[in-house]
Length: 344
Image (cartoon, rainbow, N blue to C red):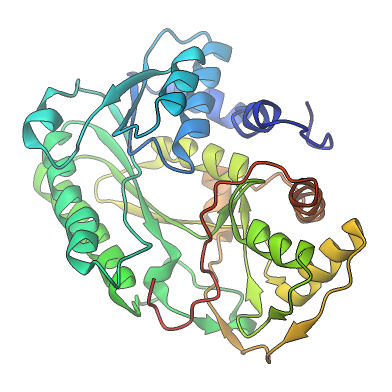
């Protein structure tokens, strides 16, 4: 399917989300070695692993793509294996299991803990700070791309266009503090063992089963009054996020680099919901007053290295509204993007 064809099934959607870009094919042709994705059982990991596999196949590269996770559902693991991705079940906190993982020259570290950080802060600190130290030591001879979060910046004026990589970090709340800690531990490991590192500050990847647009579409479909206090947001289509993340392997460096991975537009939530309502024939009501501050990332600086997002915002909005209105499969994991006090 192409970018204008609405996916009518989960398999069509995942094929679309895992379709590699020419840049990803080129990067994985040029960099030698297997790709390992740690924490690959989450929302991004499965389609990113499939994209890496498809990129290697398209480029004639005979190397492994290895997805590592606890894999709490057998079906997720089976689907990856059917797509040619090797899988390993591993508790990354278990040093013995971590040591048994095969060496891999290219490591994508996706592990993190966000929702529940306020009620279970010790697990948030362990997952987001202690675990990166273990991963950094274990893969000290690898090229590492590690996920961070746009939450490290805190909220900024909407008029600013979003935080940039050189802005000071102003974490607000337990999760955001641990996200800064995650970065610090990866950088410490990179400095100690001198391995190339790229930190990706991701802001709101979205697809048809999960994301800010899904949260909004569910409210529109249910005819709920929508609170617009958090009135602005930027979102990034998951295929673009996957492609940009894999392309980051080519730019991991020592000393480390930081790149924002974010959509190219600041979206006004009120406008997004109205457009969704038009697509599915629903009138939308709003409550609240839009704040002049929001959690926004400016990803422009990284586009020259990672590629410019290809998915049009209008298509994202239309597809998401239609998918939710038709009762398409959802992951049931709200983003809580409206949170303004840092408590997740």
